[in-house]
Every structure is written in structure tokens, then in C-alpha cells.
Image (tube, rainbow, N blue to C red; front, side):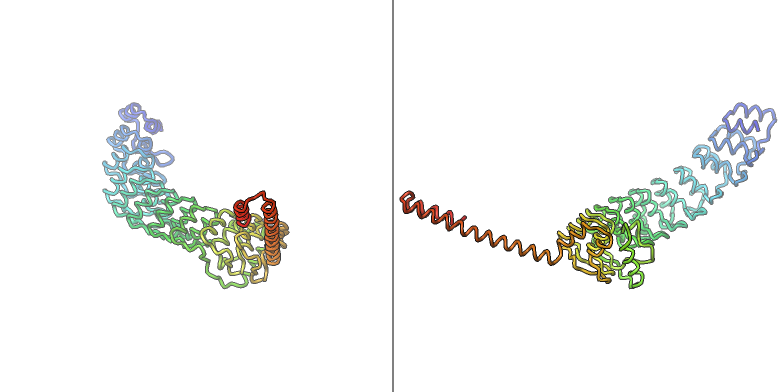
Length: 443
């Protein structure tokens, strides 16, 4: 053991003395099945590694985990030691307990020279570990641009998927790496591939509100309406999370602002959903209706109202969203704003001509939701905008205008009479009279 400790500690002189006295066996293993060469390679003591090999150490001896000295050198980024062992003919086709090959480990650790030598030695560029990750997937996840380029140059499958269905492009999106995304797409990456959760690279970019990467992906043909398994497409996610710049980007690139989800046709679930709306304290996507209902007919405006995002509602209306659009249940954005207790949103919708008289399939108006939930201020606001009150207000305005007009005519008549008296009394000349008269009539 003292010999192994000396090699692990980098004490070459002690190791040489022990070897010279013939007191040690270079093939001796400890309780883990490791030799002195394992430890010297692990620490990167190249001089000791050379000494041990010269004295007959077994180059490819595997410890109890099946790991060799060369494997240790690669794992610990001991580049010079690894290159020396490789030069001496170290075995390259070994894996760790997770199925990682030396190519995987070198790609993970950024050891580009080792990667080059392994590929030159014939290592399969698309070897998979136990999670079906290839070296390209690992290099991408670890943001190593040079190794990614090298692997692609050597024929790595740019659309390889692991057990979760993730591709290198999805990993580039997860790690927010625009340069890698560009390289992968230039080399044929499938831009609209979705993993087993239904997530595309674009949707993942939306998770981080990564406008630059999202814009690039859209320009390269990414689909903005492809939904994940939980029903979220990139534009739906951005809208529900109040990402106004992202939504504007999608609208600028052709998304129909009044696009609605397909009608589900599931009447039972729809009525259960309406019952939930009456009782839920929060209609946002994070506290979503539990049953398997696809929110048929839902538009971006509905979604913004449900999530309580007034600024998003304003943006959508400015961009031309139909304010009275109804979903499958017949609810409008005004229904959801009232049910959510969002007074400012209700006021803004009403000021922009939202129709408070529209009824859903249960013949409920927005005011019915505010009544059910006890939002009295919203109820008062909706009553102010009821057809009867609007008509009454218009009538009052008309009467006021008529009264003002009558008062104005009376005032002018009196001014003209006063002016005539001044003319008759000789105070004003005819010319002055005509000038003042003209002023009164024009006023």
C-alpha cells in the first residue's frame, strides 16, 4: 500500500527506491481493484505513469468498476497523461457504469485533442450511453462549440435523441446557446422536433423569454402553434406568462391574433368547466381546470383575461383582437375578467366596447359571475354599462346639449339688442355696429 500511496501522492523518488529494491509489485491492487497506475493517471503524474509502464504495469487493467488508468486520465481531464496512454496503445472501447464511453467523457470535459485521437482511432461517433445520449448531445448540453463542430464534421447524427426525446437543438435551446443552435441548424437539425413532453426548441426558448433565439428559430421555419402535451404552444405560453415582446414577435411573424383552439365537442367536460369557473379563486393557467378539457375555442384574449394580465389584454386589443370573441362555452374575455375579480380589466374592456349583454351556453352574462362571487364593485361597473344605463346617459347628454344650444341663442339675442340700443343712442357708428354684430353672430 505504501507504494500505491507514493504514486498517488506524486512522490516519484520513493516509488523509484521501492522499485529498485524489488520490494513492490507494480500489478498489486488495493481493495477497489486499482493499481498504482490508476492513481498516477488519475492525478496526472506523467513521469510516474511512464515509470510504471516501463516497469511492466498493466496498461488496460480494470478496477472493480471496469475502469482503466486511461479512463481515469480522461475522467479527470489529465490531457497529457491521457494522450501518452493512448499513444502506448491503451484500450479505448470501455464504458463506465452509466454507459459513458471515453468519447462521452472527453466531450463532456471539453478535451478536444482526446476527442480527435479517439475518433482517429475508430471510436463510433454516435455511441450511446445508458440514457441514449450521444457525445454530440453531451457536448451540446455542456456548451462546447468546438467539440460539437468536430463531432458533426466526423458524421455525428445531428438529430440523435436520448430517452427523453431531446435532440442537440433542444439542448442548445435549454442552455440558451444561440451560436450552437445556428451550427446545428446549418448542419440539418430538425427545427420542429418535439421531445416526449411535446416540447420544441421554440417552446423551450419561450420558457426563458429568449427573444433572440426565438426570432432566429421562427426565421428558420419553427412552428409557433405546435402544442406540448399539456396543450401549450409557444405563443400560448408567452401570452399566459405576460411575455408581451414574445407575443408581439409571434404576431409580427404571421400568428392570427384571433386564432382559437379547435372546438372540443366534449359537452360534459365543457359544462363541468363552467361550474369550475363559478367557484375557482384563480383562473390562471397555473391553477388550471383539472379535468381533461382542451378549452375549445379559447383565443389569446381569453387566455390573457384568465391569467389576469391587463397589459397583455391592452396589447392584444391594440393589435386588433376581437373584443367580443366567444370560446366554446360562450364566454368572452369580459366573462373571465369578471369571474377573476379584475375590476381594472373589466373597466378597460367596457371602455373599448365589450358587450356586457353576451350570454354563454348557460345563459350567463359577465355580471352573473361577479354576482356569484360577490365582486360588488364589478357588478356596479357592469350595471353602468348596461344598455338601459347607456341609453339613459345618451339621453341626458342630448338634453344637456339642447339646453346649451337654447341658452346660447338667448344670449346672442340679448347681445344684439344691447348693440342696437348703442347704435340708436349714437354711441356706435353704423360701421362699428356692423363689425360687432358680425362678431356676435360668429361666436
